[in-house]
Length: 113
Image 1 (cartoon, rainbow, N blue to C red):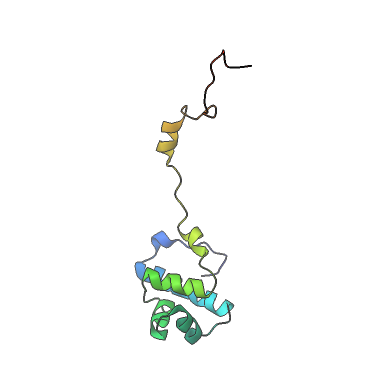
Image 2: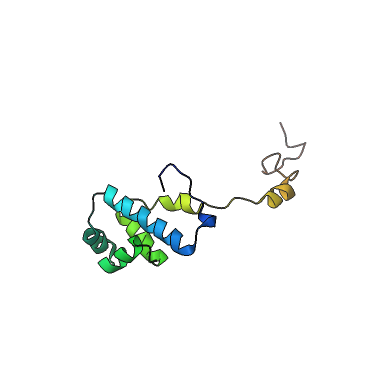
């Protein structure tokens, strides 16, 4: 698939998603101009494990993190799995309960001025 075409991961099999993940990791490595052996050594993994990842045969999450760190793309995890915000239900429950003022030590009317 072209890079500009949106991927429909929901319609893809697990095997196809792994293949796309591997292709993208390989692209990141090549864009970083790094050989498989160098990435594997710096990540502390075997070259075979990297070949399995790039070939779409899967890997552990820890291995993927190590490889992304070596090629300087670990920050991509933020796009992959962003921090979840409050759900629409939680937002509805909070509606009307937003703070209107800062809490602080209240002064008695006689203490003012």
